[in-house]
Amino acid sequence: MSPAMNTLPHEQTTTGPPTGEQYLESLRDGRAIYFDGELVDDVTTHPAFATSARSVARLYDTLHDPEKQDLLTYVTPRGTRSHKFYKVPTSSQDLFESRDAIAEWARMSYGILSRGPDYKASLIGALAADTGFYGEFAPNVARICEEITDGVKFVNLSLLNPAGDRLKPLAQQRDVTMHVVKERDDGIVVRGARMISTGSAFSHVTFITQFVQAQQLGAAEEDFALSFFVPMNAPGMKFIGRPSYEHMAKRLGSPFDYPLSSRFDETDMSIVLDDVFIPWENVIAYRNPEVCNQIFLRGFAQRLIFHAAARSAVKLDFLCGLLLKAVEMNQVVNFRGVQVELGELIGLRHQIWALSTAMAAEPDPGPGGAAVPSSRYALQWRNSYGEIFGQIKAKFQHLLAGGLIQIPSSSRDFKNPESRRYLDAYWKGATATAEERVKLVRLIWDVLATEFGGRTEMHERNHGGSFEGNRLETYQTAQHMGDTTRFTDLVDQCMSEYDLDGWTGDVWPKWSNA
Ligand SMILES: Cc1cc2nc3c(=O)[nH]c(=O)nc-3n(C[C@H](O)[C@H](O)[C@H](O)COP(=O)(O)OP(=O)(O)OC[C@H]3O[C@@H](n4cnc5c(N)ncnc54)[C@H](O)[C@@H]3O)c2cc1C
Image 1 (tube, rainbow, N blue to C red):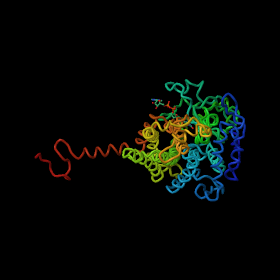
Image 2: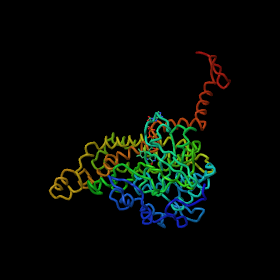
Image 3: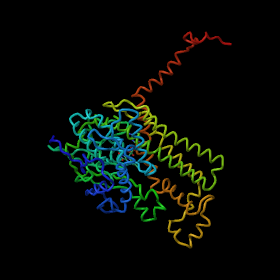
Image 4: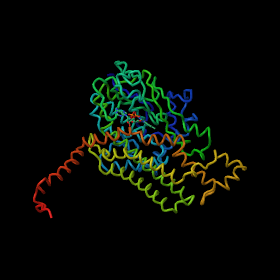
């Protein structure tokens, strides 16, 4: 291994977080993103990305706002200020404080942006507490965590290979899956593809590891057992993503028509590693299935879900507000059955907040004395949130029905006096003008029903793991933590209290049939 070098980009280690402008500048680094047949020159000005990039920049600006500083930031051991979720928590109090900081940022996008820079603080806070686990790479872990924390860098994550053939082991899909092709004195060369990395267009650094949910990488899969950080502009890193909803919004309408997709499209990019050189300094696991199998589980997954839970709780506040306003607007709110649905909606919102609270209130002891958000409640958030989101979406469909689709093609119909006359007359609500009603319905449509809304639902259901994998992990974790034994012990205790001859002890009086 060569001597340690600082190879991550955009050094700000002694100056703390960038301002929004500095952050945008840092994205102009020659990263290779392909979009709509072309290589994107600059994500901060490209019509598919610019407005959403600005939404992330706004988050960075709040870190410099004296009124928000105490809520959002802490002082690192190096004397810099960073977002609170980058801190290694050692108590419930720390976790509650980071939740407040996460929720504050989440409110700035109404819970829509799942990936602010703080999302992958879940990784950094877990690694920083656990450097010893990485053996010879421990100094890399420590250095990288400090660098990322001090610069409040935005890390994106790729855990998985493309779906490929789920029946075949990785070694039989070498043409697709990511693996090491060459070891050099100064690092490794990596080839292959990755399924998805959300937020990558707006990130500084990609973290890549190999994870097979609810399964283990075996010794024969050493070539695939790699974990490393790689700057977005490393030669050979290619990003190819889904359509941009911001782009669609610009082509089809205005912020009035697409108030969320036009500014909070966080991007989902697949990654091709076309023989990317990774210097040893950025490697944290090499040909090491044991370490790769554990990385996700040693606090990182719990923290990642902790972040998602706080963010999704804010989103449910927003969804509650949307439905309440909509049912008031056409006065169905006065029907008893509608109030029952609203009560259920609000209860679901409380449930997600409660899981987030429980994760902070009952942390698991983690590596290095870290307080890890409760695995049990984290797993249940992951099992339930996708379903809850689906239930809530159905409530909008039940209660708003055809009113959801009675909208003009775009805000331009309001600008045309001829059509406006009809809109004003016939598109109004009981308590709202046509413009007010359509504005609200378009917002609801964007959050739930546009292509952006559809992707969001996919995200809420899948981003933390597959339907089956999540439940399987809940079962496996319950076994690992001794919960299943405790549950069956309770049953054994009950069954030991009686047999064919009646009660076994002397607690209850001798049985006699009446
Ligand atoms: C919008 C969105 C954003 C995402 N962002 C990210 C990101 O930023 N970073 C990242 O790393 N990932 C990301 N993901 C990917 C996400 O982590 C995966 O989709 C999730 O972990 C499920 O894995 P999978 O898609 O490979 O599903 P699969 O593993 O293929 O599972 C799908 C279903 O197939 C069946 N199945 C699969 N394998 C088996 C098996 N061995 N035995 C039995 N049944 C099986 C099960 O029924 C399972 O429910 C994102 C996904 C979405 C939708």
